[in-house]
Length: 174
Image (cartoon, helix red, strand yellow):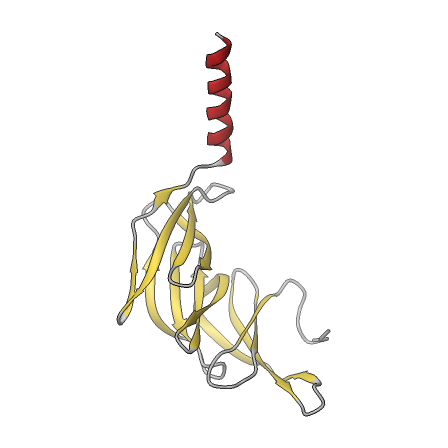
């Protein structure tokens, strides 16, 4: 267990191997803020893990969500920015400010809410700005030298399934 006394409450984090080092980097962010706090992890000969000093990077927009995704022999950052209207894919070496590789704008009247790497693509969840849950998705695939994004598509929601079952039951009762 690591104790980081200088980190304010409410920060979220990810841990991933960035750059060419053999250790990981802790990345801290607070949703809605622009600051990205990076700290290198080191392991001494006895196996003791320690955390290096904070390196702070001011991003161009507030960070809503942050994800690490593999990219060949490196790891890239995926940031959902602002209110979710923009998603950026960044190169990051663990020591310098992340560099934008490509930016995606959410389709009209939709915002990005989450992303997950499936190994050969990102599945990005989208929702209406006022909605609580994601009901759409978009596939983002690597395509040399950048990425391509599909059009957004609807997901079947639990409500739709429940209402469909209810309608089916009602039709058999008549």
